[in-house]
Amino acid sequence: MTEPIQRPWWQDALIYQLYIRSFADSNGDGIGDIEGIRSRLGHIASLGADAIWLNPCYPSPQHDHGYDVANYFDIHDEYGTLDEFDQLVAEARDHNIKILMDLVPGHSSQDHRWFRAALAAGPGSAERDRYYFRDGKGADGSKPPNNWQSAFGGPAWTRINEDSDDGQWYLHTFAREQPDFDHTNVDVQQLFVDIFEFWFDRGVEGFRVDAVAGVGKHPDLPDQPPVGPDVGVLDITWVNPYIAFRPEGHEAWRRFRTAADSYMQRHPERELMMVAEAYAVRRPEIIKAFTEPDQFHQMFSFDLMLTPWEKASIERAMQDPLAILEETGVAPAWTLNNHDIQRIVTRLGREDAHRPESWTNNNLALSRAGVDTDLGERRARAMASLIFALPGSLYLYQGEELGLPEVFDIPDDRREDPVFERTGGAEIGRDGCRVPLPWDDDASSSYGFSVPRPNGSVGEPWLPQPAGWGAHSVATLEGIPLSTLHIYRKLGEARTAYATNQPLTADPVELGAGLVGVRRGSLLVVVNTTTEAVALDMNNPELADAQLVFASEPDEVDTPDMIPPNSTLWFTT
Ligand code: BGC
Image (cartoon, rainbow, N blue to C red; front, side, top):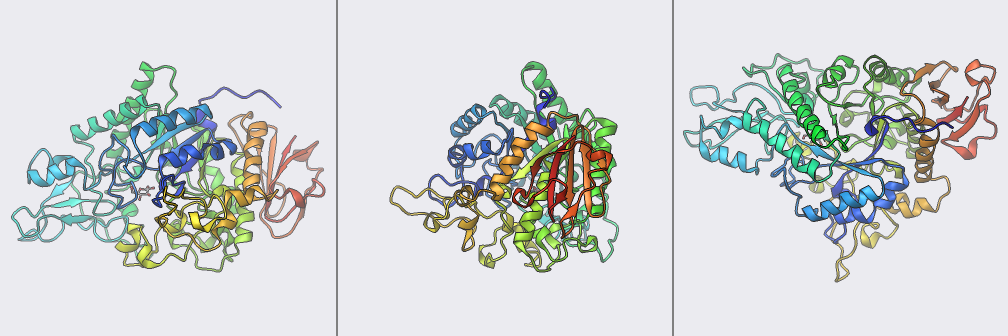
């Protein structure tokens, strides 16, 4: 074992994505909160996390669960107070855990004071210039300014004051409650500099920057060219050349980077970072453009998250991020789950999970084939065992360590995601991966999610938990020696012992049919994507003197040269 390598912490970090509303509820109102996080920091530390990425916890009317920010300089009252947030940052630091916030630059909430002021001020005002207000088409302006569609379904424009002379329209790439900012406006530019300063001063170490693909628009707002019938309702926005991946956005990112760099110059002890969120699968030129040295430090690699359980597809998914690393030195930010995507246990447990043609880039529209969650959980462990070894950061979404499946049996009247309503129910939306976490087997406290109020009562969890949820709970899995929770903890340890002390490089290794091989320095990782145990050829020079150091199904490994089906092994050579 060699000494840890000195590199910026975020290049090779394990980051726990924490969806605050569903993590832990300290006051029995059925909604997760900051005190809940503080009470469970030990769990996050037990996974070996270097940082927490907190989904938005700013004041918000919660039309898109925090991605509609009403005030960027405070904490949402259901979640706690700024004082509690400061305590969280300090206590997390005691566990060697940094805090990253979620920054939503593309839009505010309709409740933001600037948007209200814009409505009040009227056409042509400086207040309206912070957003995209335009007159409608047609003699009475009753038609939207152009044909753009929202990423959540339905038109991207909403008209205000339909019955008055001021019948302008405003643009919203997402829901109507999320009006788009115009980043060419100097007030908007200054707002984000102020946001950085405010949260960096509170000890936040960086930001996950939301939906960067849609920031910046073609200045003339031209009509979108016709799209083919194969483009799904939630994809129309992302094939709109006047919204998606616009050069205008990069001007904003350069300003963001200047703000972060300027802060670091004034505080040289800080090592701040920003990771960009956009779906740029198989579009390496986009990742490179966003991670130019004057823009983001990293950008998510969603390739493995959107990949079937099949050798060639998994190898292809690693190719672009690793090539970018080699070419530019920008380390990937690997992800298998997040709050927008069907959980991996369900995806990889599908009967057709191994068929590339059954996959699309849009996980909400995935296959409806039957699901074997035991199989999916096993493959999820194997896939995690791959990304824990790879060079770069990895983002682990809460509940992944519990092997949680997607929850489908949520009654329509309890669905909260605006996608459900805006598509008239055609898309069920993302609630199924956001169900509150089970901490124990006690159904009377929402499986340990809620601490009862002083009178002993517990509010309904904001999204219903399915019956039997306690079987996936932390307390239950603690008691099962090779549970997914224990495997994730072992992975965290193995990562420190054998992966992060290796160079930031990785190369594919050919080890046989159905086997995905990757070498990172002296660490060799093998994934068996087949349904059979496979004999490894120990005479292959890649496996010379190989020592088995980790297995995703340890109780099935009798000899190191036999790799169990749907599993991963780590060797040092
Ligand atoms: C976030 C979503 C959110 C959307 C709009 C996405 O990238 O991850 O949860 O609904 O941006 O802000």
